[in-house]
Amino acid sequence: MARVRLDNLRKVYDNGHVGVAGASFEVGDGERLVLVGPSGCGKTTLLRMLAGLETITSGTLRIGDRVVNDVAPKDRDIAMVFQSYALYPHMTVAENLGFALKLRGLSKGEVASRVGEAARMLELDGVLARRPAQLSGGQRQRVALGRALVRQPQVFLLDEPLSNLDAKLRAGMRVEIARLHQRLGTTMVYVTHDQVEAMTLGQRIVVMRDGQIQQIDTPMALYERPANLFVATFLGSPAMNVLRGRALHGQGWSLALADGTHLPLPADAALDAGWNGRELCVGVRPEHLLPAGGAGSGAFEAAVDVVEPVGSEVYVNLRLGEHALVARLPPGDMPVPGGALWLRLAPGRVHVFDPGSGLALTCA
Image (tube, rainbow, N blue to C red; front, side):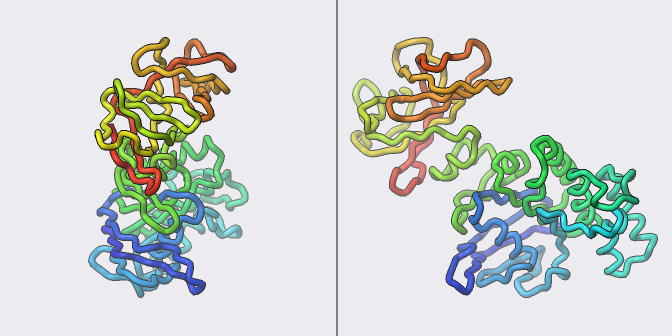
């Protein structure tokens, strides 16, 4: 096991494109850290820099106490799992698992021992004689994990390893990867574009956009205290509702929207007295739009557009004037499309952002 430390790591390509702009953070010894962001944000480039598959333009990369900027991938004591599995089709599962160990010159007994241990851990005992074409997608993914596992590296690097699986298999493999990490305690850096994977697998998450780190924190801290609008809307499904308008203070605070609609804010919304008349973006998670039961203090009426029952909860798509909202409600008496619903914002759950910079101003 080893910690990984990045100090102002940059990747600039020959055409001037900045793939990664000054990444600085530390992955703790035995930590499971997730890099997440949309396609093209630099997360895979950063992972390949850790692996030695991408040259570092500037900055310092340490694995353990050693600077590895110019160390060859094979000498970094890391193991990488790729999105495409990258299995040898002409080899059996056992041969795929043990191939890298044979190249290292380990004895047949040591290779067999490590392969057997990994196979038992990943429930591959019964398919060791099969070739990849005879395996399911989940089994192939477990073989790819096992091939990294047998090397007993200091650091595991996983590049979107579940993206080729269907939804049910992805959910199962997420649990397997988390269980595997708990058992091994090995440092792990995991790349995904899927925010659900990031939230469920990451002990800490690095959110990236356009080559830059937006925020680093635990999953729930990112969800509850996003640093900016991008993080707020990227994490969470359905996404956070965000409305832009002018803050007005009278009997209480409200947000005056461009179409003349007013959104009443909770009494405990922590807006600064000097913000009266200021343009703001107000965000609220779908689960923090609560049924109000009728007109009253802090309540507002929205038109029901589309209702999406998903079993344990109901997503209600609404219109507030010209603006779209989504509420996550418990199952029960479902609203009727074309009707109206009285709602209020949950106390202590309003997020306020600067519309220019996108930075969080406060979280009541």
